[in-house]
Length: 198
Image (spheres, one colour):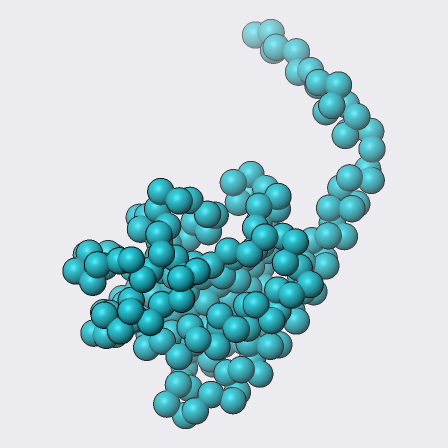
């Protein structure tokens, strides 16, 4: 069986012969990794100062920074802290970088944590910052901005949220927020980490 000829476009040939793009991309990813390391340190300092009522097993695991190449076919880096993933309970704050997109931070509650949130849902809705979005998708692990599935939390109906299989807050910052990102995320983190279930 004769195979079809694999060809490259002029742009693909140019990239194939120029390693500088990939070398620069790798350098940028290392810097994002370092930036998220600074954010993780800030998060740990915040949690260490929390009153005893907010402490618990959720901070037993240290922050975890991961990276990959295929979130919507593009490189990504993420920080999970706190992070608790069990069959009965998920509670995590995920800080995320998507190449060519945005920075974002997400509070994800499933199982027991979702149930604890729902017991005081009205308060969490009424006190939500206007920039806090609620994710109405069927997949809590999608982190890009989508105006069809993400709407301001304070506009939500309590009964509607009780039907959701998970509760997920999201906030996005442009890539140009690089210099102020640790402060911005720490400001959100200190509020979210006190929400029951986190």
